[in-house]
Length: 111
Length: 114
Image 1 (tube, rainbow over the protein chains, first blue to last red):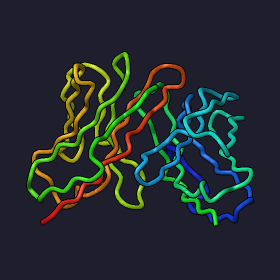
Image 2: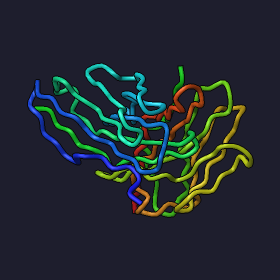
Image 3: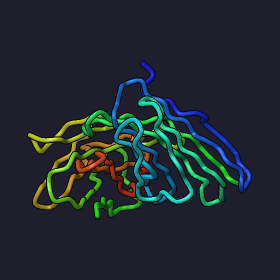
Image 4: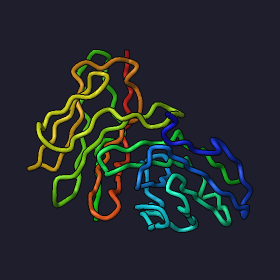
C-alpha cells in the first residue's frame, strides 16, 4: 500500500540543467497535482491532471512542463533550471476531491 | 479567484494553553475544507476535513475545527497545547469545479513555550 511515491527525494541541479520528477500512485486516482512549497507562501499549484492524457496549468506553471501518459504516473519536467525553482515539490492525487494523498516531497536546489 | 487566508504568520502559546488558528476562504458554494500539519523537513499530515453535515469536526491529536458559512471561516482549535504541537499548520480548500483543485493558505507557524 504505497500511496503516492515521489522520486527522487533530493536533487541538486546547476542552472540551465534539466530534470524530471516522477510521481507514481497506486490508488487508481483520476486527479493528480504538482505543488511547490516555499517559505511563507504555502503550497502553490504548478500543474494538474484530471485524467490520463490530460494536463492543465495551475497558479505557477512557468518554467515547468508535465505529462500524464499513464494514469498512475505524473511527471514534472524542468527544461532549464533556474535558482528561482529551488523549492520543495509535492505531488498529490485524489479520486474525487474529498480526500487527497500527498507524496513525501522532493527537495530541489538549483545552484 | 479562489483564495485562502491565514492571517497569522506566527503564533506563540504556552504549553497547556488553548489554541485557535484562523482560516478564511473565498468561494461561492460550500467547498471541501482541510487542515494539514507539517513538522520541519516532513511531509503533510491531515488533521481533519469537512465536507458537509455537522459544522464542528473532530480530528487527530485532539484538534477540532468549526465551519462558519456566514464568515467563510474554518478555524482550528485545541483546548490544551502540547510542546509536540509546534509545527506549521496549513488550511486548504478544495474547489470542486474543473480539476478538484486544492488551494492552500500561506501557513501559520506555531511555537509552544514551556
